[in-house]
Length: 108
Length: 230
Image (cartoon, rainbow over all chains, first blue to last red):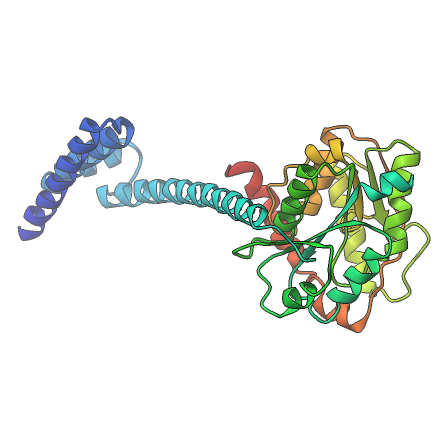
């Protein structure tokens, strides 16, 4: 099936990227992405495996398991992005404040 | 006392109050020598009007950050110029200069860390809309649970801080939740404070421009996310 081929190709590229992350010392992100790529490749090529894992976990179908996992990862991802944006706001505030104080004027 | 008043700085956060700000600053200048206006990227011409007044410091935020941020910028600046005490004063004409003066005098004569203005201590404003009064009472109850302080008016912009107390503030809430942050930090640092009756002047102009009451939800959200996301 062509979809299996395309997905396997996509996940292989992701795995290569993960290896690059590992080699540039971003270990947590690297290993996580590698794990996800390998797991995803297995499930795409052996869908019965996904169903077996899903059943063991009390979920009906492999696809359902993937959906639930995706929701969790997505929510976590959103929280991390929000946290990062908050930190950016703090930096912007500090920058703006410094500039304002440096350019303080008293008109005589 | 005269000397102390001369070393008292007034921080005025400004955002689009061109119609009244000149009068407000002129009123302050009759009593106070050190006034710093922090413009939060206003889009009207209030700032250019103010630049014709001599003797006041003007700081400009390059981007709009919020009233809390403007106040903190003003506080940082005043402290760097060795302010003995700092007064926060609104630029919209709702505060009275005589109240600010009385609060500063009280701070010095009673050796307090903070003096807070309250709308609900006798000088009841005849012009306050009822719905706003009710909402403020709820806000006060909310504040009590968050900060442990029993204030009668939690969101009053007229405050005086001794320099050492002002140094404790380090406001991180940029927008209107800064009022809650101030209350909380006063409680946490166990600063000595008193509430003093002040009169807030509500006019059609300020009633139209005032904080939307639905902003309470934004404030609660900002307080909660401030706790968890940083």
